[in-house]
Length: 354
Ligand code: ATP
Ligand code: MG
Image (cartoon, rainbow, N blue to C red; front, side, top):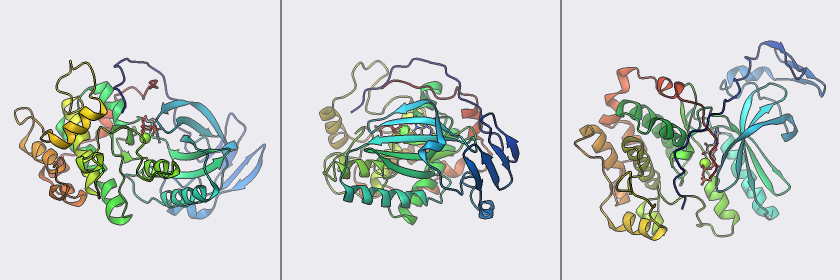
């Protein structure tokens, strides 16, 4: 289990987003005009079909290799590996490159690549796009959509708490991502937590690391070995029982409550010195009543939303589809709230050592 990182502020600037692709000659000497790209490596044509693809993907209708990417800086470190901000030398587009070192057998590698290919087909605006994946010298590299405001960890670090109307906007987007994963792809995410909910300057919230924890566990030869934090794990998961989609709903409820109260819900107060050990956490999650939103500080709709998610009996939890219709989400739906206002005013994410 991780310990919470100290609240210190480092200010780093994130390079500007790429120039819109029209017709240009970049500093690196790449000429781009319509479908044609030309630089010292040769000429490439981008297919016309790109116009019908999501805007994020339309400039990438050609194969690229790791050599086409240049590192800008390291943006994060997780238990599985390092995440770097990289720039595509040809089109100048920024990506997050996640490198997961693993020495694995050929058959498992094939299985992983297959799984990643499926992930690449994601068609949901609330799931981070994985454009490419490579396996090289014992390292799996994922070329991911770059989310320039980092994760909800970065957001909470800067604003401490998120007000209900904005939380409703965040929740709605995460729920749309979960409905896609649960109902269309029929997969359980298994690792919903603040660092896996990413935000960009447009105020879009997207789920990432879908399948990564399962992949890491399977490559370790123990399918149910969990890599990462246990903090957001539901009672049935942390105690090793069978689980289903509803374990993601428990985790979502914990994340939402943490964003609202500004601390991990199983920590009693801001002053609590040490984080619970794994066994204390296990005991609290399995044996204590579930955490809830204090009714004197939050609206009845919000309290009800949290308790619809954080139910100890998984069968009593609402589904992602039901939660999209919850009064808490509906309450702010017509209010034209722009999460971009919240995240736009924040510093770009900083790189905290873990
Ligand atoms: P763990 O490995 O324990 O699950 P984690 O989710 O923080 O923790 P990573 O998934 O490796 O670990 O991510 C590390 C950090 O990199 C994240 O917290 C996030 O701030 C940043 N990050 C990851 N993916 C992206 C992305 N696509 N765009 C921008 N930042 C990202
Ligand atoms: Mg992650």
